[in-house]
Length: 140
Image 1 (tube, rainbow, N blue to C red):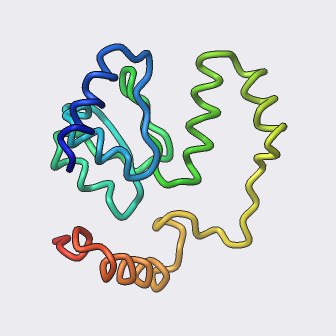
Image 2: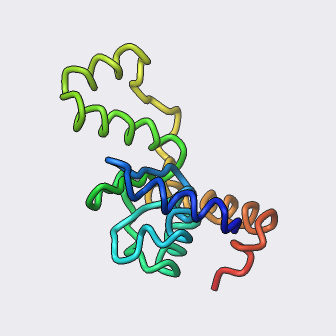
């Protein structure tokens, strides 16, 4: 990991009202030491790796711990954004944004998490990802 990026994150975190991440961005926050002792989430293939950075991995879409908010996969980033808008500007503004972007998910299959997807699909995605990512390939 680029130490300049990690130093920048640490510096920005000192003055930020919120420090947030989406998907595997939480691993970068963890590498910067910003998740030590905090509950955090990440993409389901990587969430357990958060423990390597002193975080408590949580398999939920959005986690707030202090001023840090982490979102699981990319799609949950929209959930996190609306959550944060709700916190900062209120539910009416969050609802207005949700309507304006027509965020009303209705995927054709209910397989958006490993808990819901068929086992063979979870295994397929895990194998394909591990073949392309040496970090996943080294999972124990």
